[in-house]
Amino acid sequence: MESAGEYDYIIVGAGTAGCVLANRLTRNKDVTVLLIEAGARDDYLWIHIPVGYLHCIGNPRTDWLFNTEPDPGLGGRALIYPRGKVLGGSSSINGMIYMRGQRGDYDRWAEACGDDSWRWEQVLPLFKKSEDHYRGASELHGAGGEWRVEKQRLSWKILDAFRDALEETGVGKVDDFNTGDNAGSSYFEVNQRRGIRLNTAKAFLKPAAQRPNLTIMTGCHVERLLVEESGNGKFCRGVQFTGGGRAFTAVAHRETLLAAGAIGSPHILQLSGIGAAGHLQRHGITPVVDAPGVGENLQDHLQLRMVYKVSGVKTLNTSANSWFGKMKIGLEYALLRSGPMSMAPSQLGAFARSGPEQATPNLQYHVQPLSLEKFGDPLHGFPAFTASVCNLRPTSRGHVRLAGTDSYAAPKITPNYLSTEADRRTAAAALALTRRIVGAPALARYQPQEFKPGPHYRTEEELMQAAGLIGTTIFHPVGTCKMGIRTDPLAVVDSELRVIGVDRLRVVDASIMPFITSGNTNAPTLMIAEKAAALIAAGNTAVNISAVRVPAV
Image 1 (spheres, rainbow, N blue to C red):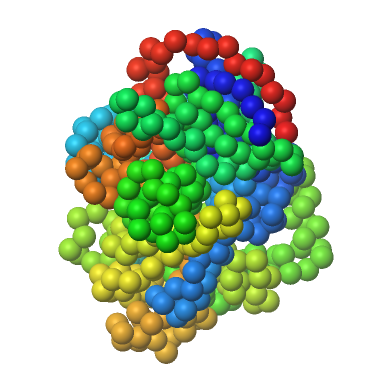
Image 2: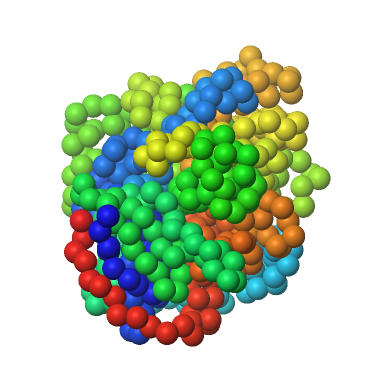
C-alpha cells in the first residue's frame, strides 16, 4: 500500500461541504490539505446547463446510482436515490434552489445540541458570508461572496395563474423566501450565473485549486478511516483509499473531515468500525466505537406529485414534444441563456400550512409547467402542470446500514416514508389543500383536470393511500450522523461536529442535521461547512507539517 503523503487536514468528499472546507482551510498558507473525491472532475457539459440534471441523475459519470430498499409506505416501491459523484457533489446535479429554511429550524438545532451558536441569528452571518445575491448586500443578504444567487430567466402563464390561485386560497405572495419566515409564494431563486449552473466546484474549489497547499485526488474511493488508540483514547490518524488501481494511505496530523454526505458519511464510519456494535459484528466488523446513532435518524422530504391536465395555455409538454419546439428551445438558450434549458427542475415555490394548528408553514410546493410519469420518463403528450407538495417536518425516521464489508457495495437505504400516523395525515391534508388551490378562480380558465392521483381518491384514508402511490423523494436526505449533546445515545457528533468517541475526526455535511430544515437542503449544508471551517480556524494551534505532494489519480 502506497503513502499518499501527510497533511494537516484530509477532507473526504468534494461535494457541497467539501469544496467549501477546501477553500476556507487553504486560505491559511501554513496548513496543507488533501481533498479526496470518488467521482471525476466536473467537466461534463450537462453539469453546467441547468436542464442537464436530466442527463446527470442516473448517469454513472455523475451519480452514485443508489436505490432505496422497497418501502412499505410507498406500496413496496423502491426509489432511485441520486447523490452526486463528481466534483461539486450533489450541487452538480441538484435543483439549484437557494433556500435556507426557517428561523425555528436552527433554534431547534441549538436546543438539541445545547449550543446557542446554531440559532438563526448566529448562523445568518454564515449564510451571508458566501452569498452574492443579485439584489446586493442587505440586512438579510450578502454580496461579493462565491455563491451567486439569481432570479430565474423564464416566465410561464400557468405558473403565474397557480400563484394567483394560491393567493385566493390564503397563501400570499412574497418577494423573498430567505428571511427566516418563508410563508407565501414566489419564484425560487437559483444558484446560477447568467443562466449557467453554479456548483460548489466552480464557486469554491476552482479558486482554491490554484493554491499550493491544496492537493486534490479524484477518482479515489475511501475504504475506511484509520482509527488508532493512544493514552488519551481513540483518534483518527487518516484514511485508506484506492484510486487508479492502486491502494493508498494518507495521514492527517490535525483532523480528518468526513464530508461524504448523508449516505456516504455513515457508510464510511460503519466500515471503519464506528457504529452500532451489534450491527457491525453481524457483518464481521470489529467495533472500534459503539455509536448506535450512526446511520440512524434518516429524514427526507417526500414529494407528492399531483398532475393536472390543462387547456388553452402553453406548457413544456407541448413545447418540447416536437422537433421544431426542441430547436426553438435550444436556440433560445444558445442565444439568450434563457428559456426551458435554463430552468431549475422546479420554478414556482410556496410554503403553506396543512391546518390552522401549524404555527409555521409545514408544507412546501414545487410547481412545474410540465408532467411525466416518473423521473427519467418522457413528458406526457398533453398539456399539463405538476404541483408537488411535501411535508417539511416529517416524523418518520429511516436508516442507512451496511449491506456487507465491501466498501464498493452500496449501503442499504431505508427511508421508512409515511411510517407514522402524523405523516400520513399530513399527506392527506396536503393533497386536499392542493385540490382547493387548483379549484380557485384564477385557474378556472385553463380547465384543470386531475390526472394523478385521480379524483376518485376522496376520503382521508383514500388520500393516505394515494400519497403512498405517488410519493417520491425530492432528494433531501439528512440526519444520519446527527448533532447532539454527548449524553444523547443517538448523537454522533457534538455541537462542534466532532465525532463523539474519536478525536481528530469531524463530520461536516447534511448528515449532522438533528432535524431536517423546512426547505431545500443545499444552502444549509453550505452554511454547515462555513461553520465548521470557522470552528477549525478558531482552534487551529497544532504544529504544521510539510506535505508530500502527489498528483491527481
